[in-house]
Image (cartoon, rainbow, N blue to C red):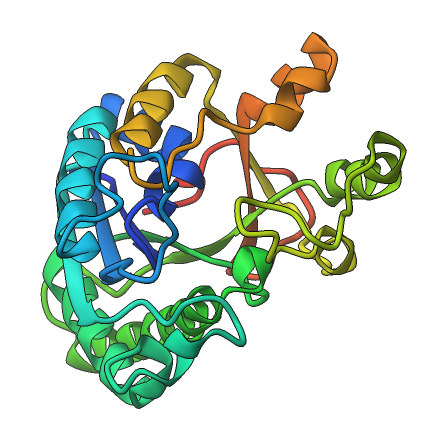
Length: 285
């Protein structure tokens, strides 16, 4: 009898599960698979719009925890777990040096914790950030490092134990984003009077640099039917949500649907044979 499919997403901050591959998580949850999410930090270093009514809240971490719970309901995931680390903030910020920041902790601590979650939840598929941190965020990079190490160590431990039906996680994916689209904006933003090296709410995202990071795409998952769930989950993160990507409105409809209606991933293990996948559980036994 085939065991139920289990997907484990491991992300750095509350909202990464929604703003990132939220459509994929919602799709597999709706299809009856077990979808678990682990969030590594409290998100306390996230910026808040000064007009947001919670901007002066005593603890942004508490607010973001509540938002995460609401987002999980919107996505329909099976469970959400949080690790005890502090948001490290963007590269070069003072938050990097906080003693409780994720990047200040020994990598081995997070690896050990993730192995425990993998052995408890027994996923066949694990998804996390890419090695470049999406937009260079130190916590995303650390999350990728720890998840990758934990994935292979969990496989090795399961093989040595050789008990039960679980033989360790079978597939590992990194999230990916079409770089051709980013390069398009890098070239067009100056004509609109905008600086592609100073993108985002705080102007701390360098699209020109990101466009040079190579993230091959081996899996393209259709999520068009789950965009409403993803939007509800994204809006649940009210402290971080700013109405969605305004740049998307400038893209012609057919191209926008081609981008927004699909989540893309790099298959790390097994090594891809360059055949495009349309199901993260393809080949899972």
